[in-house]
Image 1 (tube, rainbow, N blue to C red):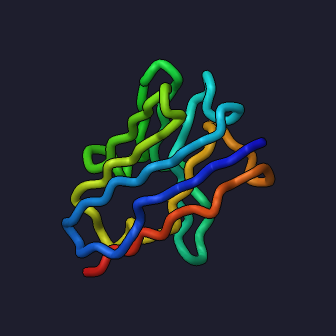
Image 2: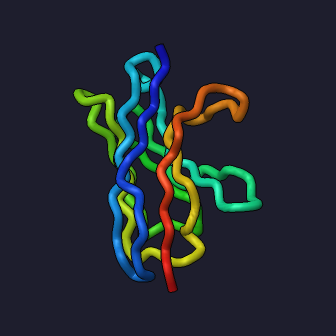
Amino acid sequence: QAQLVESGGGLVQAGGSLTLSCAASGNIFSRNAMGWYRQAPGKQRELVASITSGGATNYAHSVKGRFTISRDNAKNTVYLQMNSLKPEDTAVYYCNRNPASPWGYWGQGTQVTVSS
């Protein structure tokens, strides 16, 4: 059964840091590239970081140099370390396979709010 549980969000001041975690069921995580996505109010969901099963990473231009994605294959868990946060990073953050269908299964996400 598919399951994605995101955690670690919260309220932080601009310039601060947060680390998000995503526990995925094996049928989603195993051998798949994974990604962190975000959706801000009134905007479409966007991919901000991705990681292959072998650990190769890629980042959206807006977060490059500030965010780091990693995975623990033994724990079926993906992480997103977010540093130097900006108000425009405010969004609900989701993890899922990369690529992931917008009409497929998604977890509840975790809210990140960055105050100026």
